[in-house]
Amino acid sequence: QVQLVESGGGLVQPGGSLRLSCAASGSIFSITAMGWYRQAPGKQRELVAVITSGGNTNYVDSVKGRFTISRDNAKNTVNLQMNSLKPEDTAVYYCYARLMSTKALSVQDYWGQGTQVTVSS
Image 1 (cartoon, rainbow, N blue to C red):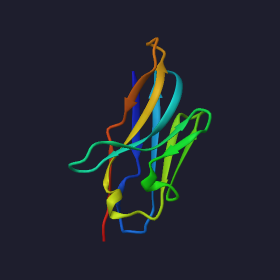
Image 2 (image 1 turned 120 degrees about the vertical axis):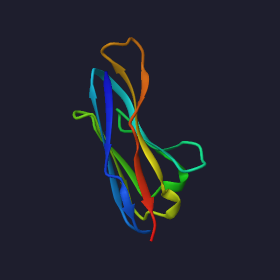
Image 3 (image 1 turned 90 degrees about the vertical axis):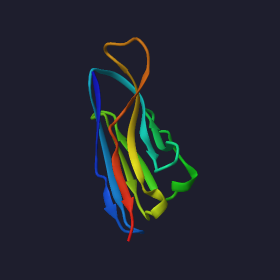
């Protein structure tokens, strides 16, 4: 069984910063990519940032230059440093991992429970 556990959400004023962290644990054989999605009320879930095992990154246009994703392959963790936060960044942020477990023969997607990020004065 694989688990993704997020931490670091909360309430911050516009222009502030937050750091989200996610740790993957369990029956993991290899991780292809890890990242973060978010879902605001009444909106579809969207990709925020993703990083591959080789270190390649991709960001949604709205966060480029403000958010930075990083990963520790040895610890199976991924972080999202969020700076210059805006009210429109308010959402539930979900950790994501595309990985192969030791119990399956195919790559599957796994999700964390989500952590609330609220940007408000």
